[in-house]
Length: 241
Image (spheres, one colour):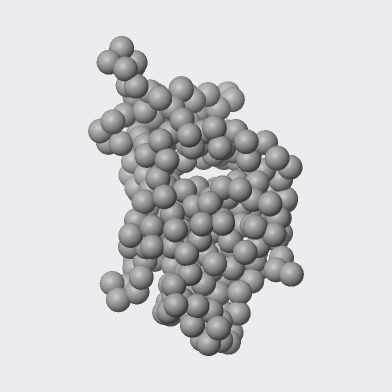
């Protein structure tokens, strides 16, 4: 971004087709804020994710659209599985499924987090409007969930959007040790089997960086997105082999 480049955020008209300004116009403070307004429906969400833009806002705010720089990503082949996580994968009796309890996963992600488990993000931004929008995306085959079970109890999981061979992670939760990490490991295994090349993590956290995530400059992220998102999509529901 040069000194002459206009800086957002820009008002987005909710009527008509989704029209986003160039992502290089995003704010530097707060980092990545690009647009305000628009609509939270499948056409807007698909257009946004395809350009590396995502919604993130709290109750009482208008819809806010973001394209932060740098961008946190996880290349599936770079996933790091620690010794302790390996033990959890083998010994804790977790069972993992795909797309069997999407609404329960997004509801759990929206709950306040317990400090004694490993997740760092707050779920309070997943307001009812957001939940309804992503449930609709799931119904249409674009949004997917990973569920981790201990017996019949849902103890962890995550959800996100898939376009082409790119997975855009949105949120995860744990109610048992390493459960969200187990969800991610099993998802990455599935994505690798189906030739996915990029997982968007949005923003770096210690939790994600410990699992192999890294940061990329926006132009590099968008170049990879152009490569992988144009490949054929795998519509839901997804299933474990």
